[in-house]
Length: 341
Ligand SMILES: [Zn+2]
Image (cartoon, rainbow, N blue to C red; front, side):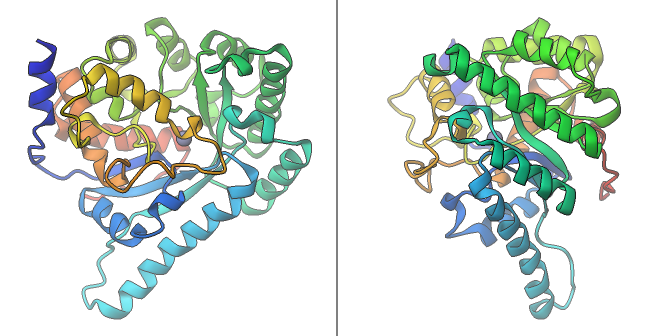
């Protein structure tokens, strides 16, 4: 039974229409895109992606976020020289700055203060990704977890000080994160915010939405074996409506299942756990995504497949869902980007 579903999903049937979309969470600055970033940006635009957010995780790569943003702006400029119609052909890139909990051992207080300085000077779109992660045993150690909590709070303080939304990365620490957020003055109802690549259960999903966060939906939603995730998203929507969701690719991770290649000998459940392990956050920062070859990386142009998967799960037509998700993203990121018609 499972295979009927997943095999039909693996048929890469064309999407019926293109809708304007916002990719709220990417690592499009990663070196795995260095060889073809321009054509990938173009393909993303052709698939409807109008804005994408480059999300920070280690202080040493913050400058790479800005270089990537500038490179994409440069594409817009060079395009003007060659083209006479002057239509936009690339998404607009935005930046979130944050020190990721998975890399807690790499962060120092100097990184925190230089980040605070950068936020002051550059005013990024958001603070992220920040949060708590106890995916490995090492990260459950009290002193390691205490450091995660300290950095999480300090970055929430920065968000409050500058009235910026946050992008949360919470993995296997939902109760602790909720408790910390409830005790903190950060108010997502006022400042926005996204629980990126949401992975908790039904009650946790509803609890984050109740606090004012949107839930970030990735390509994992296209995997019919990701039952806990699908139930959680559905439960949140049953209680709060489709207003509580935003889309993201989290590229180069979280490939939609119909975009995966060479899956013949793997069950979709293996793929599911593989995706979790392959998370950006599961790679060592020194060789990030090097094992992700060109054929097995997720790309911003895959975002419509996330829309399709969500549309099928919720039984809401893409033409209804897409404009609402656009609005939700603007609300979560405290922007008022015009939705092209
Ligand atoms: Zn991420």
